[in-house]
Image (tube, rainbow, N blue to C red):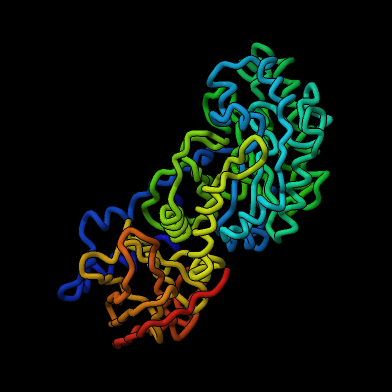
Length: 484
């Protein structure tokens, strides 16, 4: 968890409202010891906080703005491992030799790959950027790669296609930002597992990595996101522990020279432009300072295509999105297309339903910042944009009521974006929302839009500072949803 002045200000606002004034009579949401404790801890774990620092490579805030506004992206794990369909680690986990695994390249001739169809699925889901595994740990490159050891790439084998180019063209055709994933490690090299004992072999792998990165950032126009993985050595330690070998500052200075606006993740051993939390675990805790991203699988079985399907529901995806965005992060949700390049229809349908929710509630997500209230775990999160504050209600409670800490500024309207009745009462100390929404429990979060009489600054404080006034607003059956 990152600490900072804004986190402290928001936390103090919530705690002071709770401890000094006390809740109104009959309030469902009182800030008990357990609830206060939830504001002081986080389930988010950043793997790369110990990475090398070099501020000269980091993007300025203005170049990060599009990424922070985008909120939602599609991750795609696809390669030879889609053929055995037991996940992207199948070569290593099942101890398949490099020679035996290489034969899969002679079978990999996807019949239905369509970069435009992938991009359309992402766009229909409300996603704003995409990241494709151009090359995973198995060493197989999805583009024409002269630097590939043994020309282990799609253009030189059965497919005879540059899938990275087709993917990039599909992204741009749909108006989405383009991201490329690259893993410098390669299981085909014994030197990966013993770089000091086999330095010449390890040096071949490193040279391949630098050469392939240069190809990816030189040959496909503007790349918006560079997403590394696999920076550790022999599957031990951290990315930073392996920085003596990969020289990530040198590597990323090359990237920055050729792609000056690319947003770079932290998994190369250099700190990157944002932090990353991986996996499907529940998100809780306070707002996190700085740029960060949550990456996880739609199918919990594996990142690559897997015949075993353990899918998230659309509702679970939206809850995750709300919990992450309400704490200042982005969500990068992974899908694994099959050997023919097809994202499973069940995955596409799940994403379409997420897109429907965003079509109604997107303005509470895109372009917002977290706050001005700290999240309350499993109850609500807040985001804001200018004078609009969005309360994402995860659970109304048995009395269908939420009592929030004070919001500075006067609330002039309250609206449920998806339609429905809401009553809003504001005092100097509390804001109480009472739901008249008739929707089944366990579904999508409700979003209440509170419009203030003045805009909020980027740190969630009213500009200029004002004081709340008492009043009650009753809104009857409104529907103000807009498309993202």
